[in-house]
Image (cartoon, rainbow, N blue to C red; front, side, top):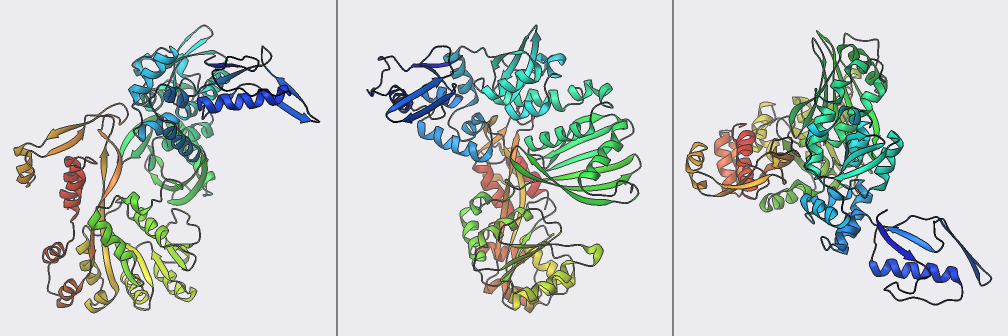
Amino acid sequence: MVGRTWDANSTDLGVKRLEHPCPSVRICVNLWLYINEYQCLSVKICVNLWLQIGCGTGIIFLDCEEKGVMQVRRTLGDVLREAGMITASQLVSSLKEQNKTGEPLSTILIRKGYVTEQEIVDTLTATLGIPTTRLDPRMVEAEAMGMLPSYLIWHYQILPLTRQGQHLTLAMVDPLDEKAIEEVQNATGLEVVPVVVRQSDLTWAAGQCVFSSSSRMRREEARLDETSVVRVLDSLFVQAFQCRASDIHIQPEVEAIRIRFRVDGSLFDVLHLPVSMGPGLVSRIKVMANLDISEKRLPQDGRIKLEIERHSIDLRVAVIPTVYGEQVVLRVLDQTRGILDIEGLRLESSNFERFMSLLACPHGILLVTGPTGSGKTTTLYTMLRFLNSPDRCIITLEDPVEYSLAGITQIQMNPRIGLTFSDGLRAVFRQDPDIIMVGEIRDTETAHLAVQAAMTGHLVLSTLHTNTAVGSITRLLDMGIEPYLICSSLRGVVAQRLVRMICSLCAEEYLLDEFTAVRIGMPELTGKRFRRGRGCHSCRMTGYQGRVAVQEVLVLNHDLRGMVMSDSFTEEEMETAAREQGMTTLLEDGIRKAREGLTSLDEVMRVVYLGN
């Protein structure tokens, strides 16, 4: 057992002692002094203590081998603090975040930049004498891997390596996690021998062993017919959550059921299941989503609500028949992760000022534009969250409702029964709203109603599918909205794209060469310093982890309204005029974020430059 031994009867504690005639009071107060002196902020007392004080006498019962001895166990945070790797305040803030998010402490400490992965490994090895290894998926034995459900592997950041007799060698990021060790011992009946490894190495190895087609699921294909479909689906849902996947694709093929996750905008293979499992998986999903399991010829849509690791998860289900069976795509919506604050949008300073000026408008239309998957809904919800207050009535028309917002009336559109955006807008006018959010302006009728709402004193938020902010004006004109109505109602447009962020664990700097700078049409960037990801286990060798938005914010001022009224402008002319008024374009914002090291220049060129 690793920890300090505290003797209630010893006088050599190294701290001030309290003398008191009541032994139970003396023991408890001195224990408190001991903990306070050593600042064991996440201390766990591994005894059962009952204290009764009455009439000046006390009785204390200690569940220990030796009476009066308490074992104070240390956690990862205590070890790092005692070794001088983190401060007490850093540990406190990390523990508070852990209580909110449920993430492993090591993940939070690394993300905050308090310690590196290697520093955690080195400190634990030097302090506790726990062996370490450079983890490789080939080190994992099939027998050991089959002993643990994948949920435990991802939840506790562990990976079984080998079994020798009654001992199981377990790779761990935090070998002081007693709950993890206890869960493994209960699941396997074996004694755990911990080996400390780097978090990125474990993530990569676990991904290979749990996800890949040659991994555990591939090795167990012969037994999958006997395995509960519920268990397979639950494992998939947890794995998707752990990977921060936005979508789960269950795709039937000739010889297998192909499972893929979309992470940071890109699809990658997770595993392949026997064709015989397809109908069972689809039927189970239909039951969970309250769909008709007997209907296999028509598309169906539904919704599933789950609780995963104390997170409320919504799964939007879309089922469609194919030549090889029914295909299912599930959109993963984490209610605790999806809505950002304004700072979370990472707006550049000039864009931030323009964005906030638009939100201050009492009435008019604010548009968010971009192609599918560019984060428009997230930005809309962020705007609603900022505008929400008790003195405002906010009503949304959505298809579908993706996140629940307290204090806001949200209406789900249902075209099958005649409830469209235009019908919903007409009904909402009679509900005394201050702010109306329309999920998308899809047709001329909805556009006219949105303009009417803006002209009658309402603030209307909505989206359009256009490539640029200026393009939204052209789109409204194409829908038949008169120029004078656009000038009177439209306040501004936010156009955006999502670019992948460079993986912080494998990022490297380089100087842009002249050939590349000229090739992308920006010779002035020659010799400038940029960053890129080499690729590592943590980012699945892509060099990227997470995404960030690049934006352009167009505010309609007097000059731009004059161009709209003239009805003889081109998009290029209006964009030039907007830039002269201070607008930062998508490409300029992307290059700025690349210069800051958030994303790579290649990614900006791929998403913004080539995309337009």
